[in-house]
Image (cartoon, rainbow, N blue to C red; front, side):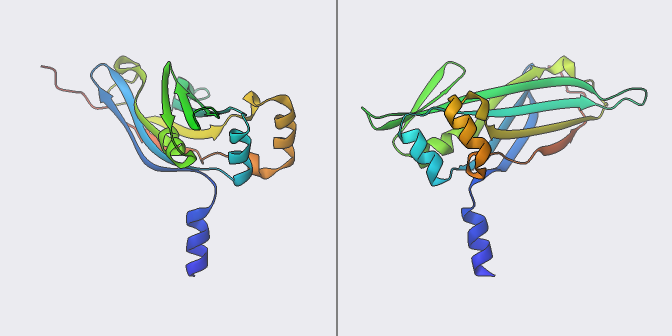
Length: 177
């Protein structure tokens, strides 16, 4: 029993720990926290200069009885992770911001922390309607150099992704001041 718990805690991949989808001022905002763990082979590839791109995908749909679901929101957040050998630091870049980390574990914590991601205007979702949402984070293999894309097809170590987190939203009228 102890070993199975230990192996689960140490398994590589991406797991969602915390999630919130709420109105902030004039937009719908997501805050989430993922645990990101990479196999040793991928950490070694980063240290050798291969940049990795992580993408967080979000979809919000509304069910319709007369047709397929209507996709109201479909957006991505891209994060680039690279290693700078001269300074021996990891660099995390997203949406014009750049952060530095001294270790791979510190860099992965920063990659997994999504705060204040504005995904849509408040008017997109109507009060009283029910919407379905799904979100996940994954390593984007299409942005790897071509030789590594081929290698990624042959080994499971390169497939790093979270499960889709499914959620339901029913916006309520907000009091205005």
